[in-house]
Amino acid sequence: MNKNFVITIGRQFGSGGRAVGQKLAKKLNIPFYDKELISIAAKESGLNPEVFKDVDETAANSLLYSLSMGMYSFGNGPLAMGDLPINDKLYILQHQVIKDLATKGPCVIVGRCADYVLKDNPNCVNVFIHANMEYRKKRAVVVHNIDEKRAEHIINKTDKTRANYYSFYSGQKWGQPQNYDLCIESSKLTDDQIVDLICAYLDLKD
Image 1 (spheres, rainbow, N blue to C red):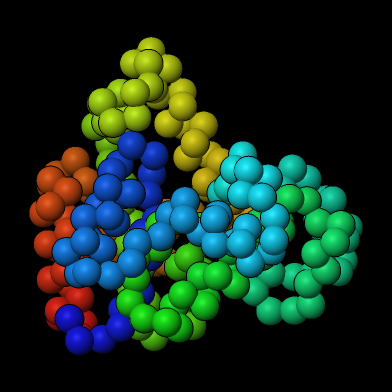
Image 2 (image 1 turned 180 degrees about the vertical axis):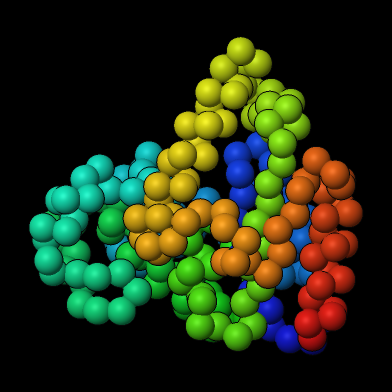
């Protein structure tokens, strides 16, 4: 891989998207960013990372509240941080961090509307990892230590939160194939095979 590709990974909960991202970054020997974006955003803002911990990848509580502010728009336009909900502050900070990271070299970024943030970056490759419910339930129990009886509820709740976040800040529908270069059903392949598949695509695109 010769180009400085930035690979973004959107993922359904329990599909293994984060694990795939970590393995991909390791194989390509490039940085990996997921929760790390919170720490970077906090450092840039001078705030404690704990402030952002519970609002990561969640939209502001009130769409009407955000619209009523009238002082900012996401993506291109003036931003007034002072009175914004903490969710919006984190999104704005992460938005800038993602753009900055993409200028520094190749990396893997999980979630946080990274595909939308980098939509104008010609070296960005967007991947969405999904799977059937049974596979995701098993993975939620084994990997995330979630009670089997609550697994499906937590999966649906987490996916809804991610979908709302993506829709709120991008104006697009989460998980729609047209927003990605590759959509991969993770229950059909091992994590390592998915990594190989993404690498093969990068070689073809190079």
